[in-house]
Length: 303
Image (cartoon, rainbow, N blue to C red; front, side, top):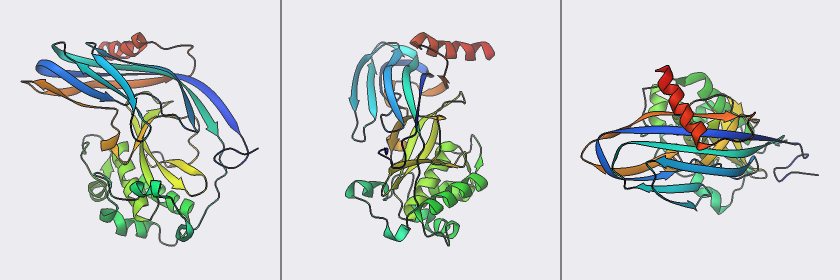
């Protein structure tokens, strides 16, 4: 029997629970806070979402809908006056660790449908034009899909130093190529742009590292003409075999299309993200919003 991804059916289903929390602080009273939250697991071959909950404090009016790429979005509008907003998300996910036997294919002969074209073209933070020469130099002599992806991923892993505080959510792939510094989001953007420059459709993924508590993580997926979307993580130097180490929230052309939290507020003052963290549990029967809030309390105790 074969999987939808090809190769023999080898599936290990692992149930996990996760908790996410973020706290935003404001310098003056906020009279309206309107947020779009992508904090629910994405449904695909690699994972099956279970029950999930998204909550805010203060509470607000909430609606849920899928966006055009299949990401679950919770829109929450808070009209209770506040100077602090806490966002919490919890849920269960069944991680389907599939062993994929991915045959390599010639880049020149790879054919993709119309649905792949938007993942070949420039996006706001990942424009292939600005990194074209570097991509072709890194992949000189690699005429196949998997060899090219591996060359790009390993080059970024070896040459782009992971460093906080040097970039922002508006840093482009071309900027990262110049500085060779950044966080997982920046490394993913450079990877996206370089793969697109080589004619390989690539998309941004937002989610969590299951065995490493902390902030959300970013990686990429590239399109195999026969097997569909396959994962790669330039931050960790891994291609295809991510195992049960990743939990996916959403996909987009780059970060600007699929941030975990985005929105706007009305106030005479400013605001900023004060704290965020997440944790995935392999040994829990359930996780509640209180568990997410406890992550926040634990941070207060440490500080």
